[in-house]
Amino acid sequence: MNRLIDGIIFDIDGTVARGRQVLPGALETLDELRRRQLPFAFFTNDNSNTIAYWVEKFAAMGIQAAPEEVVTSALVAAEVMAELHADSAILAVGDVGLLEALRARELDLVDPENPEQAEAVVMGKDPNFDQHRLNMVCKAIWNGAEFFATNYDPRVPTAEGFVPATGPMVKAVAYATGQEPTVTGKPSPWSGRMAMRILGVAPERGLVVGDQLATDIAMGRSAGMHTCLVLTGTAEAHDLEQAPEDHQPHVVVADIGHVIPWLDEQIAATPASSGGCLGGV
Image 1 (cartoon, rainbow, N blue to C red):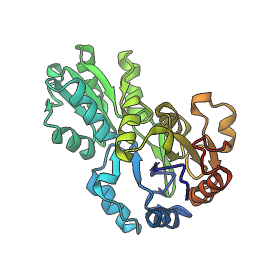
Image 2 (image 1 turned 180 degrees about the vertical axis):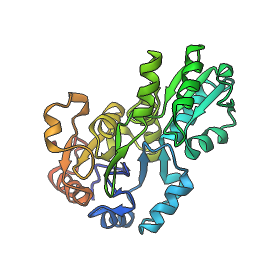
Image 3 (image 1 turned 90 degrees about the vertical axis):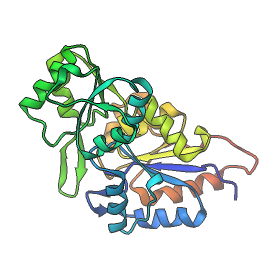
Image 4 (image 1 turned 135 degrees about the horizontal axis):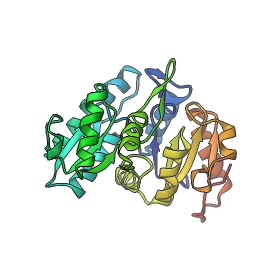
């Protein structure tokens, strides 16, 4: 069978699951992809949790995922900091997932109580973020530290609805300091590059499936991949009317369960000798 897609990147929250609840069609879709030996990986802008946490969470939901099939924005941030600030003193603001990723790269992390030592700040979602932590981060930036953030997501879907994500905390620092951070997670070029590395396929033969236009779809578009929006998370159909061109998905489906039928339709509609683009919305 002529295959137009050689690898798929799935967002997690709002695409595969909401909280610990698997979304309709997810298990069947992932099982079928395994059967077809079509590689896929999971890419989340979550920076709070470790890879081990995600592997265990997937297992509890009936999804088998190897550690190398899971990427978080914490891992992307650690890669960026190792690339740009390998020898710098770094103030890390976040949870165990971000701290573990940074320590795994053997980066020099400073004590949050000594912000004046920091040459760079990397910020994720911090469960201990309060007025004191805000003061410390701002002091570091006012003192000249370069400002990075794992992502600017305003909210994430849960089984009960939504909860604030990393963005509100980052926005507080940006507003106080007047400095916008360099965002390393989705949809940055770094995240697109890591998506390509995970799949090991040419961009034009990769597919990103996600629920957010400004992160999942924008990352896929900037990386030259095909993009599929599912309507089980943050984005709704009417959001497409206001979205810029680089946030427009190639296709919109109701949920992850419609991904394989759509792929099969594209294969059936494309001549065996053609390597052309997939059909649009």
